[in-house]
Amino acid sequence: MTRNSRYGFETLSIHAGAGPDPATGARSTPIYQTTAFVFDDADHAASLFNLQTFGYIYGRLTNPTTAVLEERIASLEGGRGATCTASGHSAQMLAFFPLLQPGDEFISSRRLYGGSITQFTRTFKKFGWSGLLVDTDEPDNVRRAINPKTKAIFCESLANPGGVISDIEVLAKIAHEHGLPLIVDNTMATPYLCRPIEWGADLVIHSTTKFLSGHGNAMGGAVVDSGTFDWGQGDKFPSLSKPEPAYHGLTFTETFGDLAYTIYGHAVGLRDLGPTMAPMNAYLTIMGCETLALRMQRHIENAQAVAEYLSRHPQVAWVSYAGLKGNKYHALAQKYLPKGAGSVFTIGIKGGYDAGVKVVESVDLFSHLANIGDTRSLIIHPASTTHRQLSVEQATAAGAGPDVLRLSIGLESIDDILRDLDQALGQAARLAA
Amino acid sequence: MTAAPVVNEDRHASYTDAHIKGILRGVKTIAMVGASTNWNRPSYFAMKYLQDKGYRVFPVNPGAAGQTVLGEKIFASLRDIPEKIDMVDVFRAAEHVPPIAADAVAIGAKVLWMQLGVRNDTAAETAEKAGLTVIMNRCPKIEYGRLSGELGWHGFNSGVITSKRRKI
Image (cartoon, rainbow over all chains, first blue to last red; front, side, top):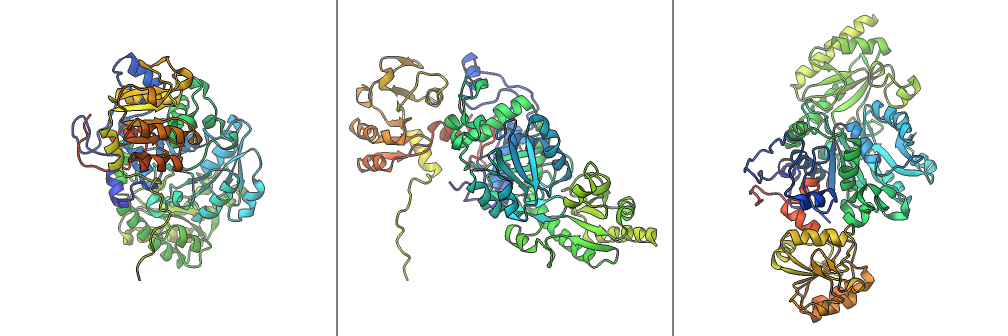
């Protein structure tokens, strides 16, 4: 079923999920800053608790402001539904929660945000879940790693921090040959640059903290279900296909059809794990979505200019930006991100670890912090920050070796961005001299 | 050069919102074939929801005929219902639909609706030839919720874009 096919991306960015408020006519989405919602009567309450009717119960499960954002993101990704969460990290937990039982495994690209590598390989172990990291550039690595315990394949469309692009169509084909869903983190690309569901992804996740909210002011995450994966096959996903004791033996796939995954995300995932997005953050993220297309156009325009400038800079050893001709991932970028290869990428600085530290301490316009996808330009030295929990080998494999700097190019005047980088690189060069 | 005629066009792959809305606005009485007395079955959910929205729902289930569910007497067959039925909603596996479609035609129903996951093109053809409107692989509860905005309360993509204030 084609959804929203009559409307363009910019229209959906502004309108999807957000008609005028039914109660007041307010045109901007109201912030429903409430923890709970009254029941009409005992029977209405029972129907809601039994999941027999639609409606609000308690803010941990659903909220009208957050629901607008959920519909907005589901719509932009071309999915059936979405579950918003407190952060991108909790979106990953919620995404796997309906799929994995203790002892189960999933296969992930090894080129991930460093925090995800730690979550997948260490913290998830406490749930009995194993995340197996492989080099997904070589599809046979994925095929070889699949075993009867494997329940999903995971990658980032545009990987953080290295400017790596996953071959989503190939990974989706491998996943589906084995009856597995492909989960794609689309945070760095956003649905403006890449829509993974159109390439075969079954679930798409976001850290909405980044480009979707876009202003560095609201934490959040989202899990989008395409609505097309058959969760009932072969009893592989018992949380969805077997009776759920906590709902009197209701079976999610049978009762809710293609809504099952998203209803489970709210009714069991958020209910029992609790990482709910705050309504205020949902509101800020809705505001961000409204200008997503315009912002992304400027982000990629500035990023391309910075990447080209740095690729000619004497203090820079290499630039890993798939928008550059000759980049290893340039062909994949033209396929999956034809409008532009995002605005986050890494560079290698001559002078290694110490030079990297000097640059992040010398910038004046760039902010030295651990985030991406802000209106402001941002810089970080992953080896001394986001990836420092990893071994040098792991960090290097993830594209975060000692000489690596990660840039998130913002929306400032391009001349100011280039001037700030140039002066900081100059200071690093004087340090080495 | 003229375009080749479209063959095997699947009219039931998708339905317009206006078409579904027209059906849900037009019908008043619904016979639910495969209605369950178990409060935790999908058909019970749908029946309760549709009753709340003002439809009169007549449950049909030969195994439970004579019992009562949600205040309504259960009938053994569509032909036993004494009232005029606008729509027949089928909660049965696809292979059981043809005789139900024949009964729907016999009692003069206007709509034959097969639930999410249920599709039988032979049965659909029988009903359509007799002038009935046929919907397959959809749930009226979900469609009602989607088009009224309620489904959006739970984070679903309704496909509805509007600058008009909805009725509560």
